[in-house]
Image (tube, rainbow, N blue to C red; front, side):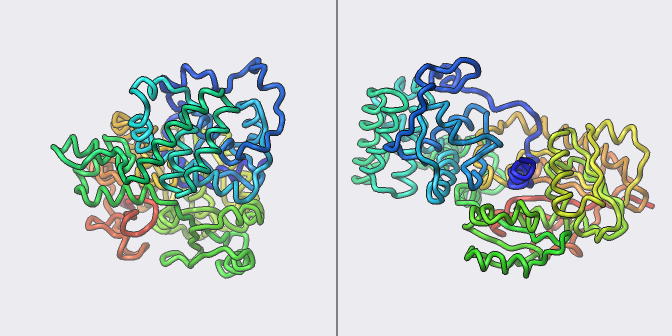
Length: 525
């Protein structure tokens, strides 16, 4: 179980740091009034039977339930492992308890479809909801729609519009799911709305907004056409210009690519990893920037099923995160603090570069995730150079006199650079979050500075592309701490990633990587 949990954590190792509080996703009005949502306690009598229904498409049933869980805050849009399990619970069992019947087990093709449909439906939610509401009989039909029915419609719309599946097969399958999971009338509604969509598709007449009018009107249209919150569109249009903002949204809506890091701490070279991938016939290419990394667009499920992650031979880690570790430049014998370490992707990579000499002090407020990090460190054979410390870092630094060679603050942030992988994140972030995050980042930077020895290095990084979380935080910090200065990172990463101020920045549109930022600051001797 520990390995399954660590796998789930490490799949999201460089994106989940963007979560800055433990509060669950907010319920919307449809969720609060749902009669279809699973509840604790006594189940609906219809849920007791749980007969196997071979007529219902299993990937659609699983996708509908998973989308319900994500919208209600019970799960992230993460990947299913080889047995169809997600978030540590049996996926098929959850489907049975929610819908009142079971389907056949998921096959490999079903798993891929669940991943595609869940991720894609979440990315395109605003776009899909606009079309669904436009094709409903009236506005109240959409606003009062129960959550499970809405998810079934979203799946049908996504399959027809974005996956180019045979329309009438999609209609038939989703109508059947609605009738069995809900009631006959729900199936009739799905049938009517999906058939309207098919007619509009055939006539090339989808009811979409036009890009015209003033800036606000255009922002709303772009938000619908590219399925992003309006506040993000306005922010990016202001900072980047409309054309670049559109390219960024197109990247966020594309199928995510992944990178694997060969675990050199366990003696696995990139050549060893490539040999394993060749045997599995997984398409891949070597990283242009990092010697331990391999890129892949498809085949991650095959890697998972083959056990490469469970055996600790490699980790899923984006190259943008690996380049942050390059900015830290860990050297054997050094003492390093990772201030907000969990889930531990950068911690493990730094430890692997110490060659068994030195120490990475991994501090985090989440004890459970630290425990998983500790277990994974053993699996990767780098536990001898990692010490885990359960603490609020702000309190820890105040009460600790230790001074280290290097301190990495991979700060909680908005995650605006990883929206391609974290499909659900765009809908969970609010504009008002930004001010709260900036205050937290300033507090953590001040705390991190206390642990840097004279002549030592402080590295501040985020998985955000927003200048208010990046350059502006560094400028404010330097005003408060004149004993620190910028150490240009040109010696540590390729020139293409170096900004005019000497910071590291990966641009998703330009570099085809997650967006990330890092500043290297030296403390005066």
